[in-house]
Image 1 (cartoon, rainbow, N blue to C red):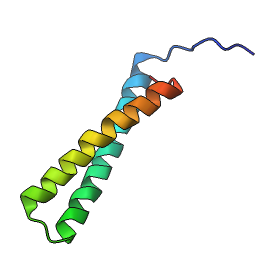
Image 2: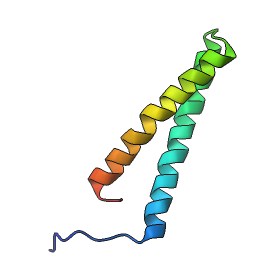
Image 3: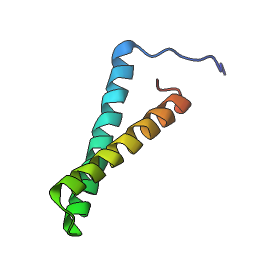
Length: 70
């Protein structure tokens, strides 16, 4: 069994980054909805959503890089 690193084509890597970005957007959407449901103003809910996106995307990309998908 070979343990060599397999290089993925550029399009596959781009699709994984797109999946990570879409997942981060979904997390941000849920965070914004939950922040709005707790009675926060719209700008505060948007800030919560942005923070959730900014925290989730690097985490997803780090996991993908560690797994060797990038």
